[in-house]
Image (cartoon, rainbow, N blue to C red; front, side, top):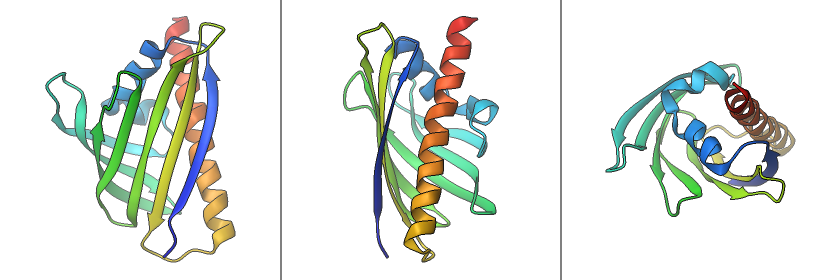
Amino acid sequence: MTTEHATEFLTVAATPAACIAIALDFPHYPDWAHDIKDAQVLATDAQGRGCKVAFRAAAMGRSASYVLEYSYPDDNTIAWKLLEGDIMRALDGHYVFAPAADGGTDITYELTVELVVPIPGFVKRRAEGKIMGTALRELQHRVETVAAS
């Protein structure tokens, strides 16, 4: 089984704090992240941030369930590791939110995925690109919509 790793980058017209606030609001992911059907915070850290979150998502024509463990290595990074999942062995990654020169935020999104079921490489790369691109665009849209209101 091969592990796939990818990185995406995008700039959002909002502050890092605004972006991080949306990214940490796990219960509202189904409101704006198209493939996320349910998100439940199972445990929080001393600052009230989700540190164990269960998700149910649409994936490859079916529903996938998984639990991620979140950590916060610095003020601008949200990292996660897969604790359990029904169709993946790894779903690890992080967001880095850096102030942009124009007053917005540069977001870097890195993701490592290893699925349980073997899938041809070209299908996996297309799915990975769609997942990452969609995740960033949906986060950008949500942050900019909230910032404008």
